Length: 315
Image (cartoon, rainbow, N blue to C red; front, side, top):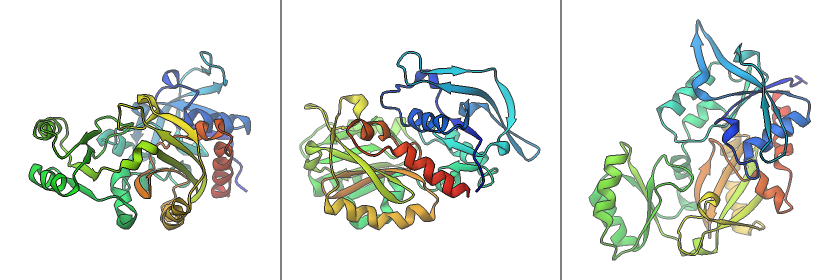
């Protein structure tokens, strides 16, 4: 077996994370526990020259102590192909900067194992990849045509409108059939985003929760239910959603069974899917979250299961 020694983590700066719920921190802490040496860098520190991909990295030491969770050593320029594993973990937006970093990391993968596979991350945006499983989804429209969206709302009644490449619940709006602000909302979206928008049938079951299910190498390993605040349609924890323990239903197990082969084919070792009621709404492959919340509510140590899968892949 190819032994793992050095792990580079491409992430938003470690100083700014909330360790109580940060999955990148959980993954990195488990790597450190296993004796791997951690190196930290942010995406703008990547450089490609003469066929080699370099980064200005800092040795990183982690502690599970709020307010004192990291130490960084002196920066050093390294050839990333000398790393055993690179964790691709910066948060979206999934913009051209993000896409460019996947092109660059593709130059070293799979000799250096990049998690998740950068080419497939680039080709599988969360809200588009899911359309491969249209029969598992709520009714969905992807367009920038205002008349198409108006017709869709007339047919569906209530809809959810959101940016196609957004994240974390930003820019998510619930528009009811009699809402007179739709035209203004579409004008604002048109000014903010060059890409199409996504409109989905509103699912009343969201009041019961938006379930995040974590899959490792295509297999479900844990879940949490995220319940939106009383006056919000979004269940994301950082905008007021409340996490609670949960179990998988038969329908959710079937959804995981259906999508598992596609995840394995694309080399997605860590994926977080979102399910509302009986419907799959997103397949998150960029920087899936929820590991620490699952553990907090007595679920599996997903960070450990992930590194088991990475070690098998390296073999």
